Structure formats: C-alpha cells, structure tokens
Length: 199
Image 1 (cartoon, helix red, strand yellow):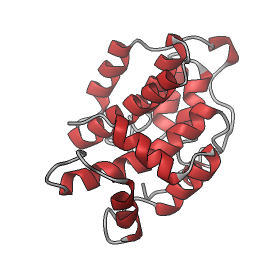
Image 2 (cartoon, helix red, strand yellow; image 1 turned 90 degrees about the vertical axis):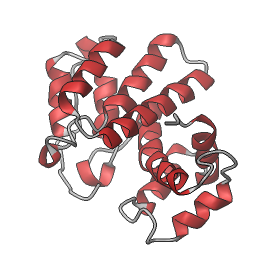
Image 3 (tube, rainbow, N blue to C red; image 1 turned 135 degrees about the vertical axis):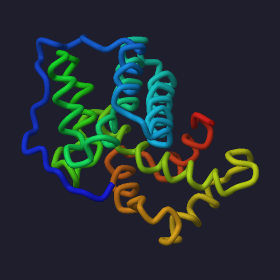
Image 4 (cartoon, one colour; image 1 turned 90 degrees about the horizontal axis):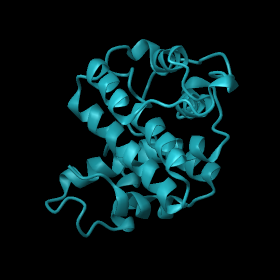
C-alpha cells in the first residue's frame, strides 16, 4: 500500500445495525463483482481465513467468528478497481447495506497511517496485524521450493531485514501492528505459518 487517503472521520456505520452481517455467499458475490485480480482475491481470502482462525482459537461464538472472517475477506475489496478511493468505497458500500459498524470500523482502521483511523478493538488490531504480514509470508513461501512446509520464524525474520525483498511491504506497519496487538512479531509469524490458507 503506497497511497494515503485519509478518511477524515472516525465514526463508521450505525449502532442500530449491530448484528447485521453479509452471508458468506453475499460477501463472495461482492468480491466477484469488484475484484478481478486473482492475487489480490487470494490475499483477502488468506486474511479472512486467519481472522476466522484467530477468533476460533479464542473460542468466540460463531457470530463473532463470521464477523472477523468478513472483516478480513472484504478489507481490500475496492483496491482493484478504485485504488484512489481505497477503503472509502468499501466502507460506503457496507454502510449502504447497513452492516454491523464493528466490521466497518475494522476495515477503516487496517492501515492507520494511510486512512487516519486507529485500530481500537481486538478485531481492528488483528486485521492490521495479519494484513501486511500474511502477504509478506506468502511472498516468501512462493520463493521456497517447499512453500510453507518447514518454514521457520528465523527465515521470515531474515527476509524482513532484507529491504529489497517484497519491498512494497511496510516493515514499519508490521512492527506497529505487533505493538498495538500486544503480540510479538515472532508469535504472529508462527501463527500465520501454522494457519495460513495455502494455495
């Protein structure tokens, strides 16, 4: 992510829409309409999968797991066709559909230095944490003959130090997201390696 598009607001959705969610088929239909880039689509599915898995391991109820999944699945939905309106377009679409404000807020805060919205809730923070890191680790997996198999934290960290590798991934964002989540970069890397959607 390179461009900065401050959203110029910190309130999203309406409290009266708490509990309103898209079904998985509705979310996938939106993605089919909006996202033509297969790599981007796979990235969103990966992040959605990690979010759902994290919520599962926290023993959150099925409703919460679904919300976490949706936040990850839709967070970059407008990037392909409307990069100049990234985040703004998907937020407006979800507000129009009267979706739970917690999902919208998580999406709005997945890049605080780009959109000017701080991740506050656990769901916000974990979406921010998984976004850049999962993309980076996936890029690393693609250059390894065995992909994710046998991947180790030290290998990922070595690549993080190599600024020329996956140069578009912000190391500062990965570090900031780790700090905000209260989970070390090492633990986040391990979680992604163990739970990443593979394809």
